[in-house]
Length: 611
Image (cartoon, rainbow, N blue to C red; front, side, top):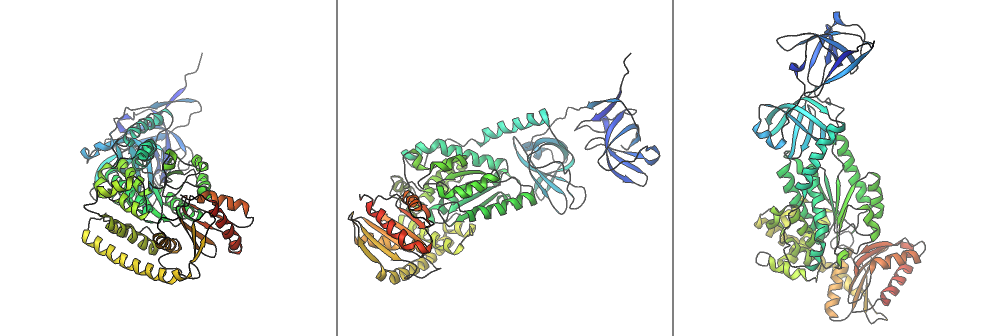
């Protein structure tokens, strides 16, 4: 004859006091101790007391204990008696819990609800622990309090699927769930909830299929990859994954980044309840070089890892604009790979295939037969419209500013200029681009979020916008005029074997250092003057420093990225690196090899065909 095992019950998540039956034995968890007995949790919300006269063995906090329910008092208190069993079977007590969607919380104020979703963030304050939970309909905060500054439910972490029960309250005009129980779901229970969220987010993240602002064969071919990138960014917003946007620190890069920033911040404010959410979920930073430097990734890692530890945030999505496409980005990408960071790129520099294995999406006109004439600001604005069509009116002038700032001669630039000509004529666009370059020089590594918005008139304060741009342009033009006046008498002229004019300007010896315009801008201004003087003829301008060279070309078909790689291989100990566009870029090297590097560079320029 088979012995019948004693049944021990286990209260499942969501079970309440009415699910407890007198006389049944339950498995519980020791919560704490008092002089008169031991407090035992039967699940995350039901608690009873084992009086010291009914205790049999010694226990520690968070250890399991078997208890029999002696009495459920009218006031809800549960009297327990410890039991010891050698052989028993466990039976789960389940309750069909009706869950509430987060989008419906506004109708449940003052009522108890149960939510199932994913933890997007866990933040410990000086008071309660704040859990940000997301489901297929949105995100909200839930506050759990043990004691001031003590982490509630330490077993639950960012990314976990949980079931939260509590009362819906309104704090500082924002909805919040006052948590009475939180249970981590595992196995099939978690899979069902996660699948539901993923399917809903996949549909919600799909960008609208809207027409471009202009007719463009290249943009049309880029549309699939742009939609892919827009979907990744939208999904990051909806799942509260922070976004770090890195961009080249010039008018084109700033315009591209400002367009996406406008779209993303508006989307965050619309879908995330925290009033300060756009400051901790979105960060924009300029990169001095037209690629993602080790210095950039180091700063970003320091920022993101501290926030991950302090605020329980997910690791961010890295978005690179007007940089990110070249072999020079590889060292930073390898560092990012160690931390499994997602990286996406929107760029118009000549791309290297080697970077694609590190990227989740890569928008670049060269991939579809275009070139750098379609600027990052143009692509970025169209991308921003896909991310959030509601911001179109605010940002539609940015492609024109980016185009004139980057001296684009693409088929798209006349269309973008015509689109905003009534409000932003071409001369105004040029002034805004110059103001951006001038102000970013003094901002250094800072984003200057509100200053940049004033320069671009994104704050919709036209009087301040006009006064600020006028002032910055006056200062910039005066600085440029002084620099050019000082440098022009020292510009060396040569005629190459190809018939092209080569002009060499030593921007270290004969130009003011550490002030505006910097070497790249100075070389560009000298180049513009010489192109006007030798109109219709091929011109190359070389701005030289002790360990760098800046190149500008008109009518000479160079390929600067290829030249950099050849020089690196050919000159042992030269330390050559750099990049840029095909005919506009910069090269770095060690100062002691300056003569050999420049001689070989000029020889390669001589071999380039002229248009």
